[in-house]
Structures are given as structure tokens and as C-alpha cells.
Amino acid sequence: MPYHGPTAVGAEERSPLMKRLLRSTFDTLGGLLRWGRKSGFTLVELSVVLVILGLLISLGVGFGTNMVENAQVQKNRATEALIAESVVNFAINNRRLPCPATETAGVTTGTEALTGATCTNSTGAVPYATLGMQRTVAGNNDNQDPYYSNYRYAIYRNVAIGADLGADGNATSLGNFCNILQKPIQSGLTNTTFLRTVDANNVTVNQAIVIASSGPDQTFNTPNTAALGVVFADPNRAISTGPNVSAANPAIYDDVVTAVSFGELMGRLKCPKVAMEEQFRFTTDSLPTFQPNVSYTAAVNPLRIAAMGGVQRAAGGAYRWCANINTAQGLTLRNAGDTANIQSDANCRANQDEVNWTQSDSVLLIGSTTAGSTNLEIFVRDDNQPNDQTVAAGSRDRIISRRFSITVAP
Picture 1: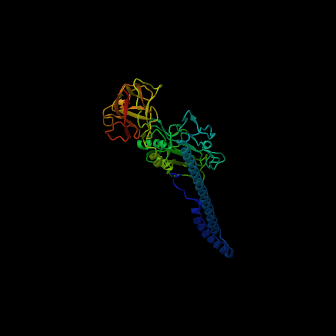
Picture 2: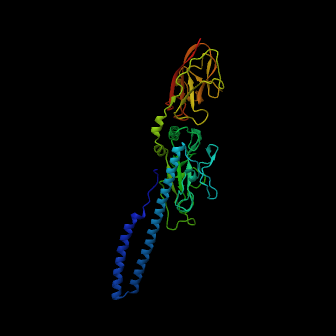
Picture 3: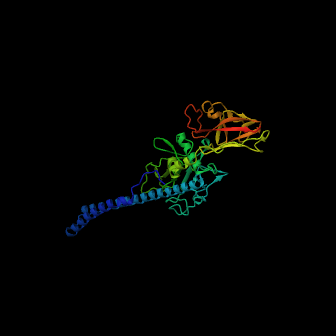
């Protein structure tokens, strides 16, 4: 799983420079000492030697500390990448992201927290037990970073546009989950209410997943401070640490943040291929020939016209429907709950805004048949572009239609 973030200079890159510097300096000191044994040192000369030794020791400690710090940062990022990969694998198998685990006084069971079929919170601890991660981190307990603090884990959950990535049962297939992931992208990825990262210029980018470590000072820095917050610093923000950074001596900024974008997640899920396999289409091809004077209700002899695929709405019915006529041969087109008629118009595609189409999972045919034959055309519309209204204004919702014949034998 790719991650965003600057690459720290590792110990292996600094070692050759350090070795050459020490070798050159000690060769020079060795020459001075050999000369001193022959002719003797003055106090001034001895002082110079001691000053040089002191500088070398200080320099060596500084380089050594930086090497350790950089190694810890690299280990931190590697662990966050491992957690992100496990989250993606969970999504492949479950068609959703795992919910964050709850954390109380620094303690977590590592089990995702669900309230019914939805996540209890958008942010919390890594659900390492749910992910099946035996030993997820470098610390002394599961879910801990190299500094023995719990990682923070957050996911995007925007119910308003049908993009709650942790909702259990929201996506009926991997292709449907891919369609859900497209919704925040279509909305612009600039929503300041849901999971996002913010750079130094206050530019907001919504993210699918964020994993963060509080760094060596064991305290989350601004803007990562809120325990249940959904705003984090840009993963590329420079880390300002020093040789004495600790819980008692906090840094200006030493958090390590990994973000998984919607594009990265969709790429890992191979969404384009899966989405193509689950095309938006009718699942009802035709209607049977009816007998006269037969009653059809939602409970008795239910007749349905249904569709599948596309970008489904999260609540209130997966699609919106319209028909060129509403009643044919004694049968009325009704919504799936039999609470309202399906919107009718001679030209649904051109004349009717989205808000006027009837929202429902399917169409019911309700009534008592009368002899004769009528052709009707039914239109169904998905939610490829959330919150749009007018087809004529360039809506990107997908609209498909099918003609049906309602024939009642004499």
C-alpha cells in the first residue's frame, strides 16, 4: 500500500560521511599526539586538543541521535503502511472499511466498535484484533508505535451522500462499494466536516483512511490533537524533532501521518474492472400475460420491475423512477412500499428533475386487471452524481429505460 509522506535520511546514508570525517580528524589528532610525545605539549596546545575532542564527541552524539530518530520514523511509517494494507484487505473481503476501535485511558481491545450496522465513531484506535494482526507494531503492546503510544485510525463517513465507508451491509458487492467510493470524489474532496488532511496553506483534501502516530513526544500536535477528530496534518508536513524530544520535552511537530486517498483505495480494489462487471441494468426483462379480473397487491401476487448495479442511494430507496404512463389495464405503478405512485410524464428524461422522480428500490404493479394491451416505458435513474437535479443541466446520473407490454387476455 503506497503512503504519503517525506522520506527521512536513514542511518545508512550518513554513515560513510561520518566515517570519513572521524577518520580524517583522528588521523590529524594522532599526528598531533605523536608530535607532542617528542617535543611536549604546552597548556594552549593541550587545550586545543581537548576542545577538538569535545567537538567530536558532541558531533558524534548528534549524528548518532539523528540516525536513531530517522530509523524510528522509518519504522513508524512502515508499520502504518502495514496497517493500511490490512485495512484494504479487510475491505476486499467485507465490502467496507473496518470501524475504529474504542480507546479508554490508552487501553483498547483492538476490536472494531459497531453500533448496530454502523461505526460508533469515525476515529479511534486501530482494530488490530478485527484485522487479525497478531503483532502489528514495534512497541511493547499491540497497536502501539515505536514510542509505546497507540496509533490513531480514522475513516471517511459521509451519510448525507451515501458514503459511510464503515457501514455494514451498505454495499451489496465489491462493485457497489467501488461506486460508493466514487461519491466523495464526485463531490470534490473538499468537505470540511468529514475525514480530511490540511496542509500549511489550509488546503483541505478528504481522505478514505488516515493512520497517525504521536511521535517521540507521545502527544498529538495540532491539528491532530482531538481524540475523536477527523482533521489531520498533511502527511508531507516536515517533522521537527531533536535529540531531547520526549513526553517531558515535546517537539513543535513530530507526528507521523499516513493517508490513503480514495483513488489509491479504488486502485487497490481494482475498482474500474469490478464496476464495469456490475453494470447498471434492469433485472426484469418482460412481464407475463395477465388473466382478467386478477388482483395484485404488495402482499398477494406481487409483481415487481427491478434494477441492479449503478450507484445506489444509501437510504429511502436505491433508485429514482419515472414512467411515460402511470396506469395500464387496471394496474397502477407504485413504489416498493406501496405508499406512492411512480412519477409519470410523457418524456421523463427531458422534463423531470431528479427530485420529482419517485425514489424506490423497485416498482410494484398494483390493482385488478382488465382486458386489453398497453405498452409503457419505465425509466430508472442511479445516483452517479449526488444532489444534482436537472437532466438538461448536464446531470451525470445514469438513466436507463425499458419498454414493457401489459397484456391482459380477454
